[in-house]
Image 1 (cartoon, helix red, strand yellow):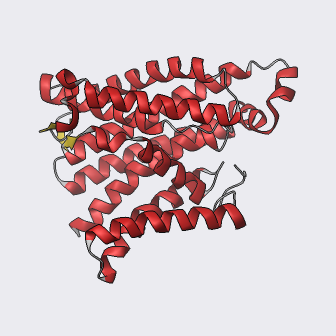
Image 2 (image 1 turned 180 degrees about the horizontal axis):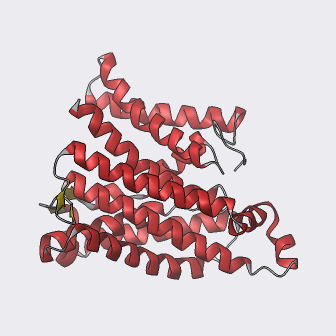
Length: 288
């Protein structure tokens, strides 16, 4: 039972990451490869505030959202100067920069040693120390972010995002400041990723820079490509699939080392097949 709860918590965290990234990639058409950086900002905010100052979990989440929001705003201002493949490359560069900061700012982040002893969440005197109660907290966060995302994509704001994805020049002719829309959705997406980071740090009770590499950003991107671009439910389908696949490999007799390589191989094969036969993902509406 504990094993299933563990998988459900991981699913909730990665579903939040997938849903938030889909707002940028699927609905707005911006190929961002820097989501793990904002994920890490939320995680480090919670880790540092918890271990150094004993700050309540909710406060650390809000500060993590604020940090990710500020950095994503600054990043978005720079990224707005790029288009297409150059946007993707520039966003990848930002992820490398943030990862390098996590790794080398040892006086704060402890570098490769990581930060241990992160306390379990407690909100309004309600403790979420057990895995079952933590699953409830993670599920509530997922439902909130899912609801916010559904509201965004079904609003007039969301319709403008889709128009930007289809033809940015045309929507500009009608007087829309597309740069503002792209910047706002980038900040919203980053803030949501920071929530996932806070949950991850509080659940694992230990973080280090290796979790927030470019490969993690690619993994989150794979979630939405597999599940479906421009489809919120598709992000959850992709997260569920990619969380369960490596666990299923454990039951076919492979060692943990071989299973890790097989997982990467399987991810690659799945993405290649999808790009060939279903580029919009399993339940998606937009082709990358």
